[in-house]
Image 1 (tube, rainbow, N blue to C red):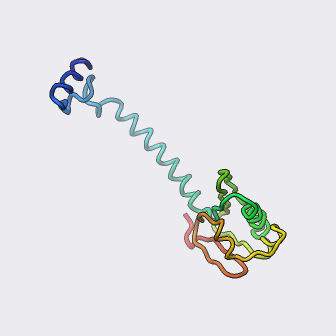
Image 2: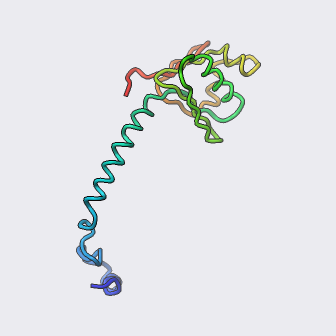
Image 3: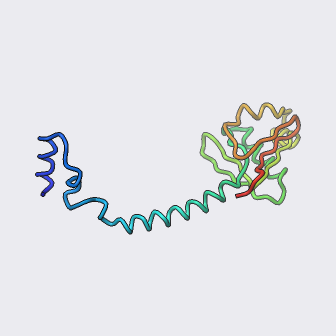
Length: 146
């Protein structure tokens, strides 16, 4: 059955028969092994990359002066750790692996003015990990590692 005949039946009867949905034969028989194999490869790569990403913790902040100060404070307050910055223009992800600590004094030094830790919440869009905050510091962390 050709495509035109199939479309004609579809328009005349309102429905096509399920086995005729693909004019060249059942769609499930076309390249199914290749599709499944590619999907499995993609899933394993994505899963390992996602597991690594799941170990990253830290704030997601609205772009601005405070975000820039937090980036510098993250580098200073977490020596020996690589700080990952993902700048999306409107917001900035600031992450390290497993734990990040930010001290009020360091943020104040970077901003060049007094700062209260509660003011961080205004620009904090989101965060990764668990959070523990106080008057003088904030900690992003995970109890379990992936």
